[in-house]
Image 1: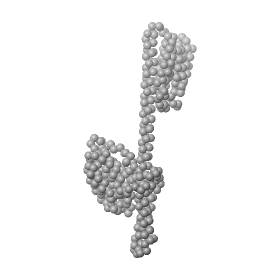
Image 2: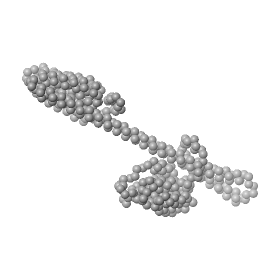
Image 3: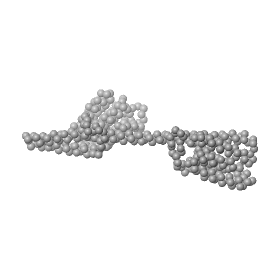
Image 4: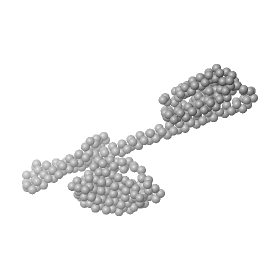
Amino acid sequence: MSTIPPRAGQPEFAPLPISRWGHTWRLLLVLALSAVAWVEAAIWQLQHLRAWFWADLAVGVACLVLVLWRRRHPFAVAVVTNLVTVGSFSAGGPATLALFSLATRRRWREIVPAAVVGLAAGLVSLRSAPGSQEDDFIVTGPALVAILGIIVAWGMYVGSRRELLGTLRERAENAEREQAARVAQARTSERTRIAREMHDVLAHRISTVTMHAGALTFREDLTAAQMRATAEVIQDNARQALVELREVLGLLREDPGDAAPERPQPDASDLDDLIAEARVTGLRVSSAVDVDTATVPPTTGRTAYRIVQEGLTNVRKHATHTAVSVDVTGRPGDGLEVVVRNKLPLGRPAHDLPPSGLGLIGLRERVELAGGHLEREVTSDRDFVLSAWLPWPA
């Protein structure tokens, strides 16, 4: 289906395709209008001039077929179908539909000529109709003008509504594309931050390995026990470096400053400081960190730290005056569970989940890269719960 050209200065929108039912009811409406306009004249034609009856019917059928092309050639179809109503009463239905379709384009330079042709043809047709009198023009003339005016006004209203819906549809599609781009950007940024953190960790691991390997090279006074201890340190750091490197394998860095080491990244041992800082800012935080933070792997600890940090940040932004609880439990082999729970502020329906911002999107990406999963839900007690499970190898 071809696109309806827009008016000058207006965006171009492709008309929606007409369904089978849409074609059906339009056809039925056209036939009904033609029947109303032709019924009296058809009786007279059959009784007095059958040639006119069959010619009228042929022209009406031709116009019914021609009106199917009204979207490709709206002006030409409207002028032709309205012009032939001079001698064909059965063409009134197709002429009405063609004029209405032309009016939806909202172009006065096309609507006015077609309407004038329709008005002139209608007046001539009424004047030549069987049994018509000159006094009839006092009623039929203004009525015809009113009918044409209603057709044009209705068509322009439908065209305006179509343009509005087209604009809204385009805005919605643009908004979806922009949201998808923001989500992708958030994921990319989170992956880049993870890569930077891992860069710092690996630099620390490799530097430790280098230092101890250098000690083995230059120190000749080490005992066998000291050499074994140093070798174990090298082995453990090399193995942990490989594990952490595998976690971020495939992440590409694009920023020119990625090679510069950043400050040391937080881990599970910094959770108490994070919660204390939140209390200082005014949050009512209760915590239960039931793990030995010193034994939590650095990668898992950093992820847990970010989960708690994001949860407290969301409470500070969206539910400042509500209490929040932080629970961290787990043990090696079973995994680490982090739960941040707070009450929803008054006025928010309990079934209405808070919108997922880019912070939660990036956090979910971080947790999944660490091999865990992140969930958020609203309980029946109006509690917003942010929970995560992270792997903790034995």
